[in-house]
Length: 215
Figure (cartoon, rainbow, N blue to C red):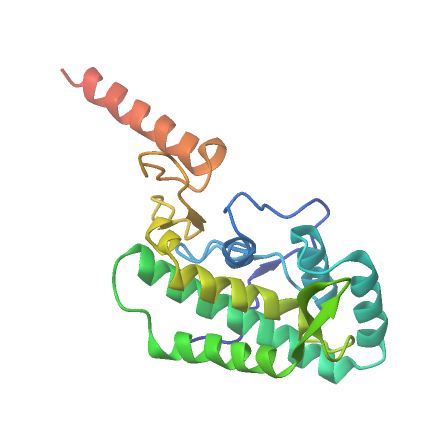
């Protein structure tokens, strides 16, 4: 499994991330575009991008994002390691979700990468009671790997639950985005009708028109 996912084209997001995949862990996979056709476009090029993604998905709150950003500024080596682990997890999730969508066994290396993050996450949380309610609390508020822990846990819960059967990969063989098919008859084929779905419709129309011209 490739761990260095620096794309040929890199861009810091200037607008909200695309979260239409249905779950944060699936949307996380989609922060790299163009896996299938090689036209890679990276949307998590820095640790700050990772924090912004986690903030937008609600995995961390604004206060935590600021605290982690301040801590990362004075710990560049730890920050680089945390970013690389996040990208490694993302590619592992892509391989796992893509395999599940294709109804084949995920690569063991990808499962090992997910399990490594799950073990790290488990060692850094404690069960506490807050205002009469049980919740998990991070033992180290400034741990730079913190943004990916809830993504790993959510991915594991998805894979263990009934919604696993709803995991899909976009039918556009050049796309590679994954999503949760929440349609009633489980017929969703495209990551988005406004992008891949619309392009497929246009292509189909042109093919029909071209075929008609030959008769």
